[in-house]
Length: 135
Image (cartoon, rainbow, N blue to C red; front, side, top):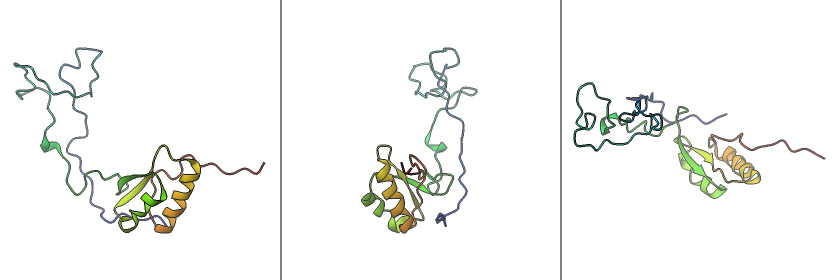
């Protein structure tokens, strides 16, 4: 049976849209979502005039209890070997293991087997696993 998260507080985002870069709609070469702080002396956005696009500020931050929590209810920790997985033994209801990108197939199998014994959720357990074929 899969491990359930300790807290099930609903995650509320104050803002889900990305902050648009000032005057990004005027230039094709500027991506809309690559936020840069406006630094001009007369900038409407920097001076926070009414009707100007909103700037990121600390008030848009998430609730401390749900910050960095995935929709499955766990916080994520990157694990590269079995000994790093052992650190999550006492925190298996709060943190879920994510196997690192550079871990081999055999290393992944060892991590997944040990995680089952310790009842630790592995977010990318199905990645890079093949059924062994007898040739």
